[in-house]
Length: 216
Image (cartoon, rainbow, N blue to C red; front, side, top):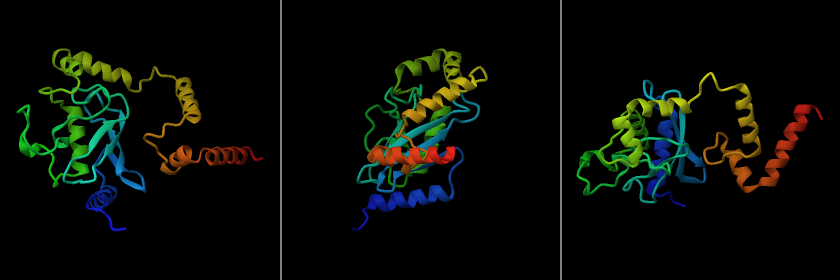
């Protein structure tokens, strides 16, 4: 079957990102079977309240990509003026070309086929460092950022790792993860696929691994 323009373009972009990834960013298809659904990890920019955090996200591409932009959604809670409570990211580069009803964006800032996944992710990193509060997706976050900057920064700092978090809490979290994996942003794509689609095979594979570990 002939590849679509979207698939050819996304495969090209994936290879470029793999060979020369931007600092603080990793991205690629969730599965080999669906190039229109990507996952990404974005490191919080240094010198910002997000520093030290790693934020998983997903991108969904339309079939007519790159004529139309993808959508991007954070899979973790991100309190930010340009992120909806659902995690959906709202920045100019993700807006389709055409008239701007709010009259605050330049046409050059919006999506065009010369843009790329790399440019999107770099723009999102810049957005984390410097929010645009002119047309916020999260009004409360924008208000806090404008009027109570210290509280805004402290809110993010309190949600990151700190020495007061104990090893016990970490181990309890890992135990919960073993019992109930999060397959929305997998580190091991094949394991996630097996867990979703062939649960019995997944459980047997885990049991076999435990037996080998115990020398049984």
